[in-house]
Image (tube, rainbow, N blue to C red; front, side, top):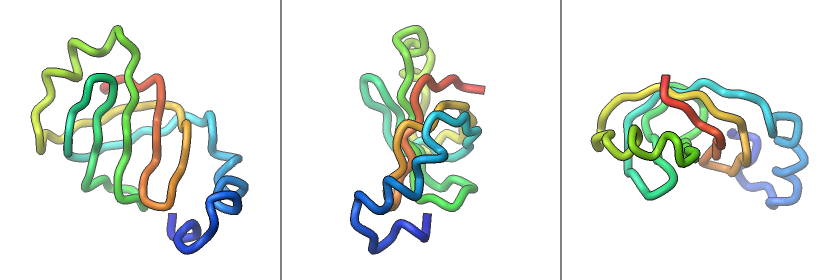
Length: 93
């Protein structure tokens, strides 16, 4: 993630392209919960935050999470930004 800081978006996208669509396991504390996604902070990885996008089938489960609760999830990398990774098709593990 440190490689992306200070780079234009187009260059960062080229660097992260090989990771798009790969599955990633993450753990961290719930920072906030929205209608279709959860924001994790304080992850053990090299990025500042993870945005977890869930399918409708998971909505009832992830809406019960609590702020600051430590969770683990798996999802496919959809996008990588300078400070966040966006995962889709997420599942709680």
